[in-house]
Length: 237
Image (spheres, rainbow, N blue to C red):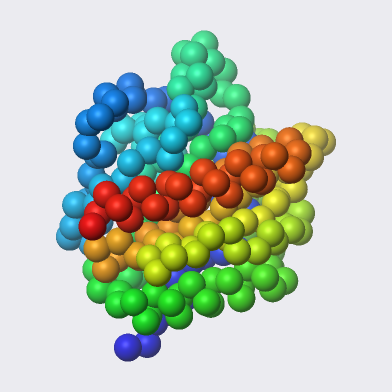
């Protein structure tokens, strides 16, 4: 079966950049010990536990507001953000997202069963693409349109720095990068981890983002993304 690389990597920087100018409110976190919530994808109910820390899922009502963070090629399944942002949102102010996570499914492959060999091909292709010279021209153009529609914030993308393979298992692999984003004259470096997962024979893409402070941010993101990927896979076995 011919299978096209599913991860729209040129849009990864766009997702992080748009987050600096877009927010949504939250619903209360699920009770401890409760089974992880499920989300419909590809005709299946897929369990997606939260990525840990303080992040909580936006819920069906407000998840729609976060859909612009996902590229057109993907469908947003779940969006996790910090609950502390809710307090600020209630004042009518929209601060930037400093730490958040998204789970998406490629629209073209949502109903396609992916076997282990095909998944390995996807992971290998993702690694090669991330290690190469990413073209951000399309992302910049789309970003300009979205930022103008939101609040006329000027956002510019710089060349991302690939961090290589963060973790790998038969059903999940994660790749890291640091992305400089210039907004209103201030450059913010964001650590992004792109995890490709095979869950119930479907391919999911999990993104985790956090503003870079120092080397400890990279180590934390590596550990957090790997633990989350394992939790999602385990919840669906």
